[in-house]
Image 1 (cartoon, helix red, strand yellow):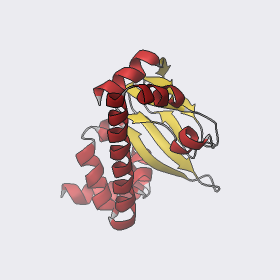
Image 2 (cartoon, one colour; image 1 turned 90 degrees about the horizontal axis):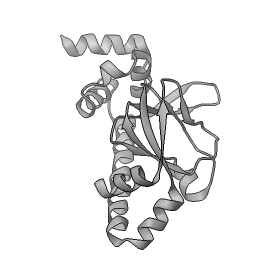
Image 3 (cartoon, rainbow, N blue to C red; image 1 turned 180 degrees about the horizontal axis):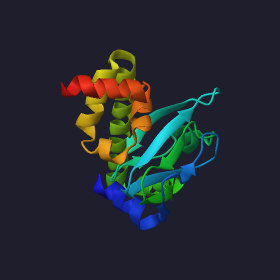
Image 4 (spheres, one colour; image 1 turned 90 degrees about the vertical axis):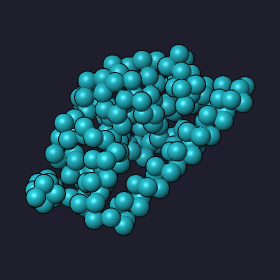
Length: 176
């Protein structure tokens, strides 16, 4: 995956972010792929009633972009915001596609990345539809050991689909 990351870092534009800085909002047009150099990002959806649903947390080394915006130039289906101070590198997806067309090795790396991306989305869908909140919380902790120190309780609760109070109860049950 480093060839892919190297291309983004070498050809992209570095952006310093602070907590609350949005790279894009749901409904925006944004055709960039973002590599998280430092910090952590949060990808989330806003329902019509204003309720926030967190899609994912993206720590250092993560790569993300709105696939509907990248592939079809449709508006972004989710928002992407910094949770911590950090740095990201943005690269227009068109440049990535063109580079992959010129380099079979990079094209293969891109295929591998998209496979992992699809697998991650399928796992998240499974978690939301098949696991209990306690199980979703345990899976989150297994995947991101330091998430409790880096993300606030309200966001953790929104990620697993419960209220902050319910998350407190889950934490107490898990510890006992």
